[in-house]
Length: 522
Image (cartoon, rainbow, N blue to C red):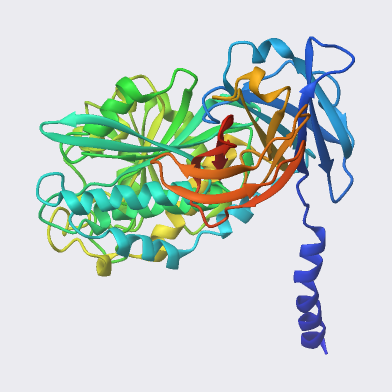
């Protein structure tokens, strides 16, 4: 009887859990217009819905770089806390519009409910990690295998875009090779400038497939992107794939010296450097000379476990001690089965050169907090930098646990929000003289969008049309053409969900007059 009662309770638990789950607020911006009561202000009209009917905290932000970064707006009315669900209007100073051709406005609403980080951690999938490694584990060297290196970069960039992130490349020269770091960003909604970075280098040495070095790091980065991109955070997240690390940490050096945007404050970096090899056999962990003097307690712990290579090494410098502690705490809280050995070096780590052998060292040199998460490379994995560095040598459970702890630490630092958002893209019309159009106005909403949007032409003193509506990608390729009949008002629903995320141009033309508007598909 006791076992049957337990079974019945177990059957009920999933439905109870789902019932208890919170649903984040939903925001939909419906219009932007001048404020009727005060011509010095503009009005953003939006609808706020919340399944639990919670009062919400609302922020308004704007971007002048296409949504890469956002700044606060000194808005009034229906912003702040509390704002109840319903049809709302936020007013903001019209001076923002004065010197900008295009602006992305964003409304964010939070119900202030907690977001379970353990939920994110539990989503990490070892099968996906294995698949990512399998896609990348071939030689990726700038001089001996440039095509395979390029395909790795393209795959990572495409993956970032498919997860809805703002993505771009930082190009630089290395000898005769044009190297490129792949960069993506998820802006925070409260402290946009405070940025936490997770990175991995995607190149390999010429003589091996580089499964552990560093296809595991790339796989960990991709899994972190897949999961974290689904959540909203107070602080910003930066995802980076570094090029030509094997040639002397060149990609990270160029990023730290030239690539950190002025609007970002790098608050901490997690660097994946070989996170897939583990051994439970005794005497499989080698310790570099002098480690006993630098890290006596850690060396004693490794020796007490018969020198087994069964841990992830969390490497920081003294300035990164708080970041290292955050990782350790996340590992204990979210992944108690993961063994972590933490090493903190003084200064920039020059006293222990073995601990400067990856991209984190360039951040140390710049006075920034950074960690290297590593299985120890050739101090454990004897296939390091050889043809034997293959997928078959790796442990997916261990790799999954390292990624789980990293996602937990990043989420703790970035501070998840139970929030919804919507964006409105405003652009001054291009090639549409006022005297031709007799006060016609054109509006595309929502913009950015998921491939469905409404084209609205209204207020015309004379009929507009017959006209064509065409959608072009930035390379000039036409994807859509629709005919509009003559009318003073047009409301056209456009469906281009087959197009890849990116920026497109919508051109409306009747042979005498035209609009060209930018569309962002997420």
